Length: 95
Image (cartoon, rainbow, N blue to C red; front, side, top):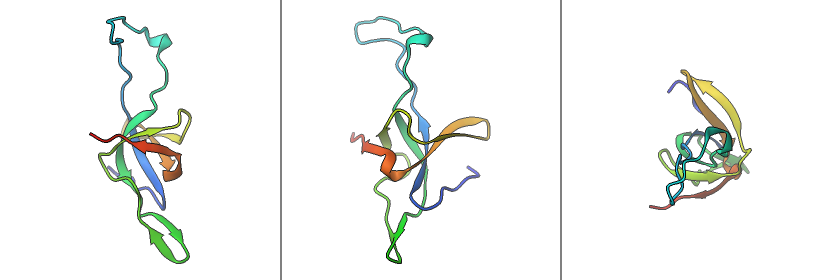
């Protein structure tokens, strides 16, 4: 990837929304919601406070949950990604 986030920012690839419900009902494209789950692609060095850099709470390849309208959409090498601050991340999905 040819982009590196600065400070406490992360670059996220949205995970695709399921096309079927658990009961087998197919969800049409117009009824799908914007996914609020993604995979971290790149991580900045961390937020600078009192002259020290606070380490990030997420790392590359973490699956995260974020608020629906968080971040800014960017296009890198033809791929749609999000760049957001670490504070916009609501949680990390543990496996």
